[in-house]
Amino acid sequence: MMNGRSSIGGHRAADVRFVDSHCHLDMVQIFDSEAIPWMKEAGCLPVSWSFCGRVDTADDLKTYFVGQKDAIARLNREGLRCYYLCGVHPRNIPPDLAPSQVPELLLPCLDDPFCLGIGEIGLETGSGREKQILRAHLDMAEEVVRRGKVFGIHTPRRDKKAVTEKILDMLKDYIRHRRSIVVDHCTGETIASVLRMGLWAGITMSPEKTRVHDLIRIIHAHGGDTGRIMLNTDSGASYHRDLSVLVSEESIGKAARAALLRENALVFYRLA
Image (cartoon, rainbow, N blue to C red; front, side, top):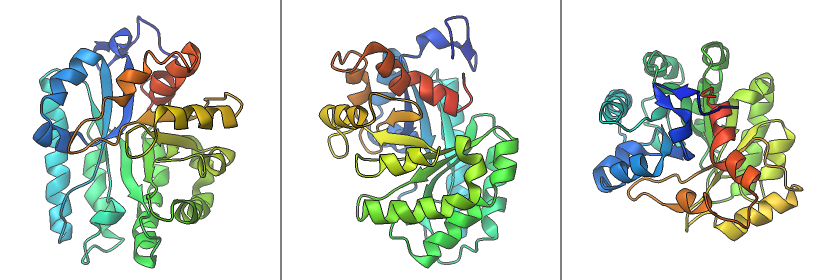
């Protein structure tokens, strides 16, 4: 675990009050720019996952990844310590993208020290096409893990349990890399299956997804164990302040809050 003498990219670890383990900073900076100075002041360390509004061709993805890299570099220069994951979101798969193109799109991103791995990838409907592209990402596991980087996996709102099970079934082929995989947007209905496989679990705190009372119920259902669970906001067009509120939420123990809001994510992302 980190201590006050540790640093993250030149910043003192003690300055990090919470980690937003999954958001979309490239969208936040455009649609809710006032959130950027707020994050600096609040002690938030965000990790931005790939998602672009509209994709028609594989070339659009290439352009997006260059823009994402530039946006994160600029935010760091301006004083917000932040990182990102790159990947083809299941809602961003263009018709001309061949699975064989996925590595050539992403490997240049993985060379960037601010890139912590691959995401946001996963399944939305569980179609055969989505599975092809997800597997193309996962087949990069040896290279990704060799570099000390990770995978961030999306699960959908609709048919969450059924589609999550399809994702977990695919992940069985890569289970030796379980310490480098987080399955996100978990709920009380899906988190047990994720943790049982030895994977990390992400919970999205926002008015639309998980509220404090939902989080407390999930923690209690697991006997108070907060190991391998991390929190995020999945913020895009507007930044949710839910994690900053949780920092002082006394209905959750201090040690559990530290694990959920900070320590677990730092360990998972190899920042500890």
